[in-house]
Length: 322
Image 1 (spheres, rainbow, N blue to C red):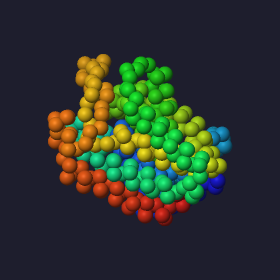
Image 2 (cartoon, helix red, strand yellow):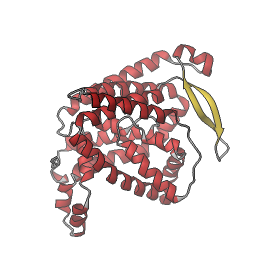
Image 3 (cartoon, rainbow, N blue to C red):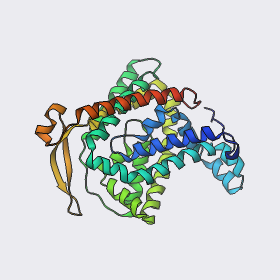
Image 4 (cartoon, rainbow, N blue to C red):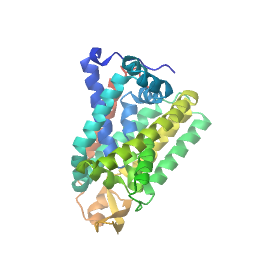
């Protein structure tokens, strides 16, 4: 697999840099939300394979170039302009939008989930068209992915240690999920009991926690990207079917109307949902005691669905599409 070679940053077209930066912002915003994957955004915006290939090239040769002070060659080898633009967008989004998205999830969850429900449905349909031949192994892989993702959505969050080793482990596991379309890294953090802990550390600029988490993320993504790249290269249809299945299974989590079945009290004395069940919008007011906002939710779902196809047209010009 050849790595797409980008121009040095100072020669990089401003328009292309801006587009990649905006895709990074979209990925960061998705990764903040439990139940939505930044990998989904990367896939539908046409940069998924390019991202994996660039990450895979952070290897021993890259380290030699770094210590040899060959920065120009290093930038070309790891697609430095592309990665800098993308990571800048992701970082901007997470730092700027974390408070907003957490606020919206707490105060208008039905509308947030409706938008992402439409986005994920359309993403699964788009991904299905990337499968060239629906063989028996591809079908089994798709069903397996659906089952795994569904199981993750019904798993129960737990209280876990706040020691640095567990923060490192949480970052390593969550980042692998974040680059998988349909598997939410934020939801993995939620299951590991570290979702709010990490975002509160970001808001408070707790350098020790943030650096430990980032180190875990780097370790996880550098290891996992090699595996995923190999699967996409050797078993394309089976791998894509698995990723599509992840998306389909995750729809259980992003269904907008939920009834709280069981709560728990965290270590700070706050009562939070532990188990939730999906309900029809017509029964939502009766069972959950909340307004379903059916019209707004439907419009947002349609908007999310349409946004995916707009991004897919944009990605047709991207050489990194699968």
